[in-house]
Image (cartoon, rainbow, N blue to C red; front, top):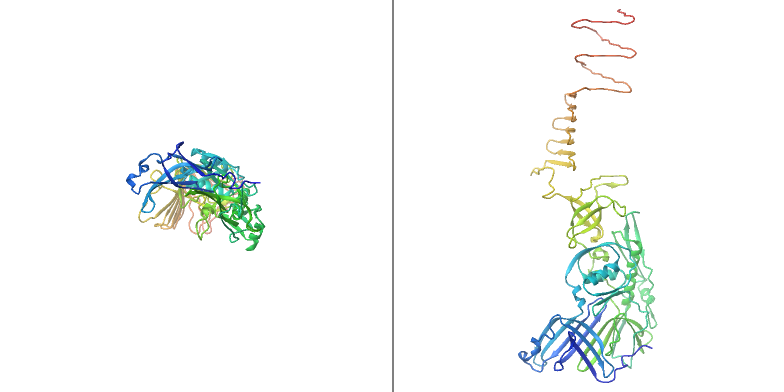
Length: 588
């Protein structure tokens, strides 16, 4: 049978406050102590010291280093000879001096667990080939804290953290894996809440319960959840439906009745990022689990007891069939004032994830990770050897993390189809502009390239903007002249094709000086060397006007026969000798 808060509560209340390991002097008048532990929050404590004088200048503790910033504070309490129960360990983070006519001068010493160092400062970082457990352990240990992180079921991969504090990123990773954070004395436990464990404390109405305020609320209960994503390989939507079966049983209350009350609703969300189906399922399970934790909520107060902590189970008795049973403790607070110590436990946890507080719109990055807003600058690192074989390009995002982050990004083209498309890949070290699907930093897409002071444009720009060009790395060019309506295609070696509307011409020229010009005058073939016409079939040359062949020597040869005729006249002549011969020569 679990213990009661009244066990070992005989005798007077005694408290112990240590500063850097030493008991504070007895002459200090400690008016009150407030301690709070809560899942997904940093523990805090406040010690209120009362002065015997109403004059602040007679309050020596204000100038004392006893409670200076950064001093380690340890708070314990107990009854009689039962010994102390440690309630809090942390450091002084602020002080407040107060004076009023009724209560005199007071010094309020605010303390927080040293895990507070994980908050406030934002940073970005890449996490390569790590699962979420490894990422969380790394963040915690790097801060000099102790980690106790359960193994996640999600896959190993690379992910980016964008502009988030360590604490917020830990909460986000915990949310999507169905975990919660429990902080105590510099240790961060990351685990799934379990209300089926043996209860740590029994409280009974009429015996030790001081205050009882519990509600059963189905307004945010869901039966199922599904997290969908886009599968690049199959070009289809892939879904990760939840398989989590809520175990909530509070007295005669079952979670099933909560979900059924509003029609077995399902929470559905999707992302354009490619996510493993097993990971999608874990996220969906986490949604249902958080809905379960929100169904029963409220507070129970009883005489001071240091034996109950968040993640423990509190057994509530003698409060009826519906409002009694085992409840998962999500927060514990201790109040010591006027010689009395009261402990309050809270049941239930809101169903929202850290990333859900956005109001009407769906959360950026679909609550999977910290979102990244707008476009980012990237530098091309590698064009080939995508480890997943998805034709991605490796880029560096120089503004992410201290040393930048290398990621694999898809490359957007004006036309991309099966076996067809426009293929103009950037060069290594080019500056590119990067967008992110659904503002998810782990779904980058290169949407364009940028010229800069080091990588100049191929043409000097003018206000008229008449010339458009396509120029490759090795100076293969296509030039568009909007003013003269000319398209020019040329190679660095001297090959050139020109389509000229202004001159009504089409010309081709090679590096050897051979040229073909087609214009209003006709077609001209020129060469600095020979011109050879060869055909496996016929070659026919015909003109409606004159046809002229001229050369130093002109040879016409028929392998079988040769015919030369004139419709009206025919003439064969030479300035010198004329020779006609054959096996038989017939002249009319």
